[in-house]
Amino acid sequence: MTRDPVCGMEVDDRSAQHKFSYLGKTYHFCTRACQEAFSSNPDRYLAQKPLDIGTSRKIAVVGLGQVGATFAFALMTTGMASEIVLIDTYVAHRISGFAMNRVIGSGTVVDTARFRFLLSRHCGVDARNVQAFVIGEHGDTEVPVWSQVNIAGMGFDHYCAMSQISCEKDDQDLLFNQVKRAAYEIINRKGYTNHAIALGLIQILSSILRGENSVLTISSLIDGYYGIGDVCMSLPAVLSQNGIQRQLFMELSDEEVAMFQYSAKKLKEVIQQLDV
Image (cartoon, rainbow, N blue to C red):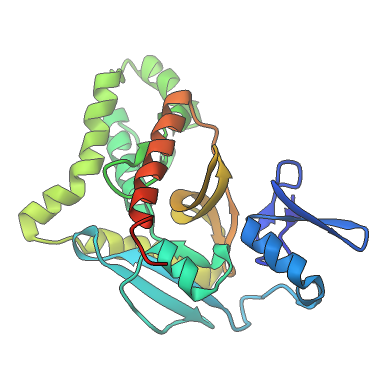
């Protein structure tokens, strides 16, 4: 692993698509935007020091509000939230001028928590013994990564067979439909959602302010993952005091890849309608 000299995010130098050679050394970048910024003025970025938790920094945190349609855009400066506006993650990235690892959406943090809880109930274990992720859009095209579900260190299928629990496709579809329908059910009962997203944003901000290196399914700019680029989507990422430390590119099944690419397609259709 190496570090992107523009945004500071960790990059796998073996597979990084964006690179630039300067004074006999090759530098690797998380996105084309970082590469272009560096190539225009390498000395500027080579002269700057990495930010520490105590230094002034700005991180845009974008979170869902009532009915899943309102976004909070908080500029984090030395650990204090300042401005709140209505905006989505992609637009926040475009207008803020921040590096991609400093524009962070709440993504599928809540969906992932619900997925793990329902899996724990289905499998009869504590939710803390479940590793599972929901990626892609926060909404109807979100993707449950069944191929990577882990129960107490065992693959999902192996755990179900050993425990004699029914985990067929119909069981999986029924369980995940509860994840997707949860927000609609809450809205039908009380008119809005608020507690779950508040807890999710607390997780995100806590990881930033305390430098916890938490792995959360936050949304951020994607560039080159399964052929997808120039769109903000949810993926597991290590989150610390300077924003996204690194994105974790999961190995997906063929079906999950197709679902993730479809999710990206639907999001891009919306982006194309925006004047940004």
